[in-house]
Length: 114
Length: 111
Image 1: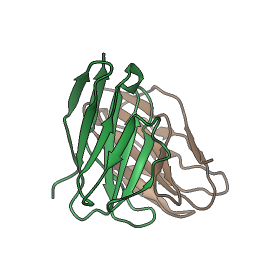
Image 2 (image 1 turned 90 degrees about the vertical axis):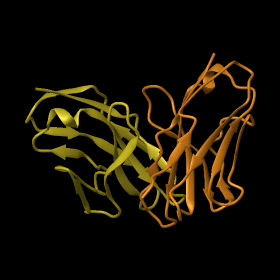
Image 3 (image 1 turned 90 degrees about the horizontal axis):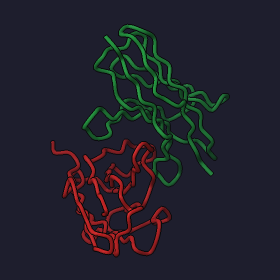
Image 4 (image 1 turned 30 degrees about the horizontal axis):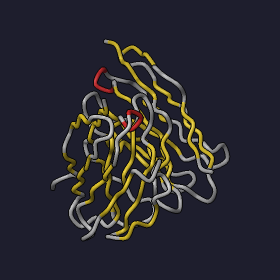
């Protein structure tokens, strides 16, 4: 079946611009996660949804970052007034809602802020 | 808090050599442990996992055993191939299910 998809795959933004990144999880997956991966580093957790409920947003680096999943499927990560330090790959993952369940990752969106 | 420490790379090996990539963790409770792999130009893929102490995860000739006494989950393969060249990430999943990753280890296998 279809895996996790993300769009756009690449995004170049000017500093101060707002961006929106989309994630389509695997159908039927209850849990959805966003991670940020800086160059040469491991992914770092941003936020977690269970269905439409955002249960953990402790990893969002500032109030410029906002995520939503209004109908419990597609999710959007929005970054307002982008800064150069926001340049990274943004990964989305989904899983069935069970302890220790495998997370399946999308290909990521590579964001470059100039 | 929870954390993962894995050996720094790059690791450079000749084809058919034995591979070990060390991973240790700090966690409260009983986390699940994972190895993910990122091939050049591709996304993160699950390689193997173990959900409780003494479990052994295995896939594609790779193995890792969940050792609670040493808080380790070292990745091993008996004979690496050029196609194994990739970045390998150790990770743990705690009560909140979010993954905490190590910094990654680049493996380069030369023919």
